[in-house]
Image (cartoon, rainbow, N blue to C red):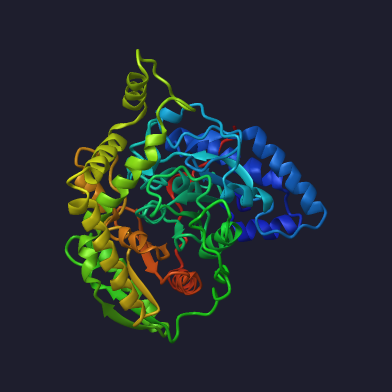
Length: 492
């Protein structure tokens, strides 16, 4: 018999409606899995056992009354930068240790309204700044495929939880690839929607023009279901898209025949692991055999995306994190003056990577340097947007590897920030453009670590993006599970 913790969201929803099991049974299975895996992974910072139990019991009552909601009773994990009422929300930073918000963010509220069972809050790189979850003030998460390796970042905890079965689905945030890169490294599906499609109200800000909430799941249909549950206009977010939500799930079975798919030439070459390249090329060949027309597309300005991102994102984080000063909430370290108190609080509350980016961003915004650095980066951003717009005039979607490598060992890149930053080389450009993108697992390397394939689409092009992703999922038939998920699970 299949362990309930191994079900997809779609399978669990069918079983709940058929009364094969109930929401409490499903929660028990997931919590039992977490009791075994958390000692190895540290995917979670907080498990809300009492709140999730009440939510599961309420879901069973609604199910008995005939409620057909696709997320009713489904155990979902939230990245710990998503504000959640009454549950400690730290963004993996000491400066917010102990803070329990008095409200739910919009995405959280919509999930609760849909009947989802919020299991707990997952680990991340502090304030979402990182690519490995090693920058968490509470210790790193580990990859369930090989616990000596990272799960990616910054949404590494969410990705690890979904991969191992301590959540059926999860949400993360994506500022430069922080959903897609960990999805690639953990063999899960991770999607970044169009900027503004999901409200950022209640997301602790890193870089406001880049941040976006999105789902992680075990299948493309599951990811679509999760995204549909939270998408749509919100009056609490001035950047929220005030229009019709794309028909995300409508074309999942449409195939790729007749679509034009562009290979981004700048995201190929010797800088990529040969096994990643081989899996990418094999997937492209399958798309071609399935009837898609495959062409090469150049995005010249993408060469400068990494440099532009690491000026724009730190500049915005410098402004956003100025609010954490020890006065209103969070950590407060006393000093003889207000200025000394603020300085001590920030020095003790922020970790080294956050401090590095605040300093870089403040410098880039300073008098005499603003135009040379931040202003120039914004001009490069415009060039990148223009390149994407031109490309989407020729093709329906663009494709590339999601990550240049598979999961790397914990500690392998922490001493060299530039090497760590390169982990996001494939994902950053779509954040700068504001377009959607998704990562789908397409194979394993010789070490048994997952390889992700990225599909990018024009703004509000989620329907065709998920259409291609679903076809890849059918063609590749990636069914492998990480070692921890297939180990003997012991009761808590």
